[in-house]
Amino acid sequence: MKWFLLALGCLLAAGLLMALIGAMIPRDHVASRSATFRCPPGDLFAAAHDFASQPSWRRSLVAVDVLPSEDGRARFRERTARRSITYRVLDDVSPARLVFEIADTNLPFGGTWTLDFAPTRSGGTVVTITERGIIKPAVFRFLSRFVIGYTTSIDQYLLDLGRHLGQDG
Image (cartoon, rainbow, N blue to C red; front, side, top):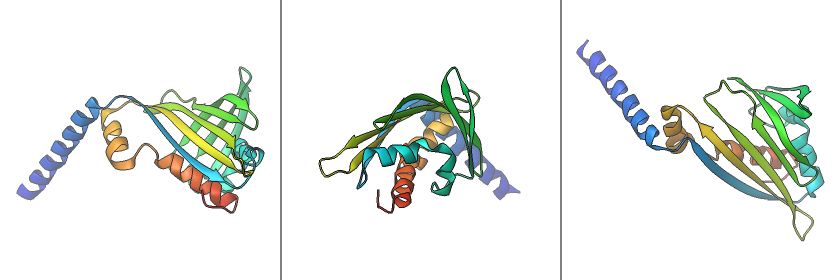
């Protein structure tokens, strides 16, 4: 019983320490990554904009539901094995830029993703994804900053996009 209480005390202390450190980390963050592809911007924009087909190439997605527009803005819901998140498209400028935000206000996080598609001189495209995120709970801020990393989702998206196009991102 003594070992159980000691282990429980250590877990509680670790949780408290993560919460204290997380409370010192700002709620807002900006993270960005870029990758170069051997395709024109239109091909990459089309893949990113075709929300319904993304489960065929994005490893984390189980399904995507294209939802009715709201206030003239396209909406979609991504479903993974763990959760569903609804997004709203804020900016849609083919083939240069796509911006969407998390529309669910009840989640412990939120923010936007901006995908910029810049042509290269060789006929390829540099895709830059910029996340402007908000993480509400202090423990989640700690985990995002020190364990998961702010760019993990961006990196996976770019890798999946590269595989979808038969290229390395």
